[in-house]
Image (cartoon, rainbow, N blue to C red; front, side, top):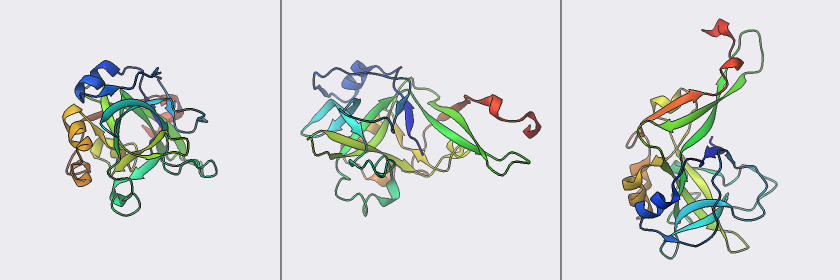
Amino acid sequence: MCYNYNSKGVNLKKALQDFNAEDSGQEYTLRDNVNAFVKQTTPAIPAIVNHNGIILINTYWGTQENPNAPTKGKNLQSENTHTFYRKIEKNRCLIPASSYYEHKTVLVPGKKTPIKVKHEMFWKDKAQFYIAGFYDIWSDGNLGFGLVTTLPNPTQAEIHNRMIITLDEKMGREFLDQKPIEEFQFPAYSPNLEFVNLEPEKIPQTLF
């Protein structure tokens, strides 16, 4: 599952233009490693949110405030949209990103425990894209999102058995406009992905 992504290369002015979004006027920080498990004391992740209009605003990562279950509400399986997430399925948002990170599980001969090898996933023909999310409202009145996932396309499947839904501006507008979630799931929709192994030194040469 995706718990890290890169927003360093994002152009927020382009994001505002892509969705004709209002700027909330907050200060935004773009990072090369946005981590779902960093303690959040204030909302600090820029997102394009369909909430009383389309607006760019800082958010939390997680639909729920639940420190005892750190992964809960961070990644949301799209197959459960109309059941587990039916109360928030129309609360749609997009998280601008330039890449995201996944860890591939690699079996090493002679070792009982597989190793995890970090990979960075990109769109082949886009410098930035938008990750689909559902959001909820936290007790402090701010918004928190979960990334929506689907089955992997062939490229993603080389690394992980789930894939976050990443969209261009056209499909992002359709997502915000409440197009059925099924139209963004694989195989109905498949982004043109590529990846880079960030930790090749972890893989013994005997595996090649």
